[in-house]
Length: 344
Image (spheres, helix red, strand yellow):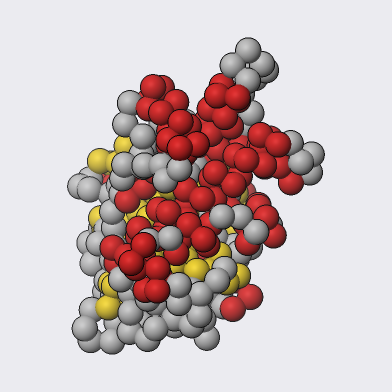
């Protein structure tokens, strides 16, 4: 049983008509700004299988990507579908923040003939999966044991910065949050950080947490450091992958500082989230970026910055932080659980 093992409540999400029962197979999707992950579930509670990762850039629309997946696995559209998407889900019309796809939930349901369709924020879906994560899918970074019957927080840098959590409902269950906490205003805690964030402010105006704590953010942090230290030097932009490789394999000084800067800022934002939610049940880090750091993450300033909240250091120090290292996207499992709730 995972540290988060307990029941979860009903998510806030857009859906089709309430199904009498989720009988038969389901199409599951986890849609990010870069990749679309699809899977098949033969029935509620069955294993999640036939996972495929399709680059979003290869398809003009979400519907085309769904059709491409179904062709790959040689199946027709099922009656039930759940889509976790890296975007706010408010009303019928979805326009992705970090990709050009847009669609109507009602039109998508009609196009595929779905009897039941759930569309929810990807980190809301991931939060629903937290109670089912196995110990081998988690790596603890400091803290002690999770407090029972307490809130849990979730944050994850990827193409954007996802934020969610699970709150106790007072009846032994947990209710997932759906919000856009990745867009809170980011501030620096050191003179060096403030210099870097000033560079981001000059470029973007509002500097949200996502501006720094994302794939593009890694690239922008690196560029800002170069501009500060070597204003007449090499200004060639580095991708997030190049920055990580430069830090871990070439021991490039600027890349190493970029990773430390990234991890320190993430620690501050994650600590803020833990305080806001009272997340004594643990803080979980998802997304595709941090697991690439390997052991460098545990050696980074992350945990020290997570705890560095003045008078509330003693409150935060016992809170465990778990890095999600599952091979298969747990948001797919969360999407399936959202579909279960719709059918209940």
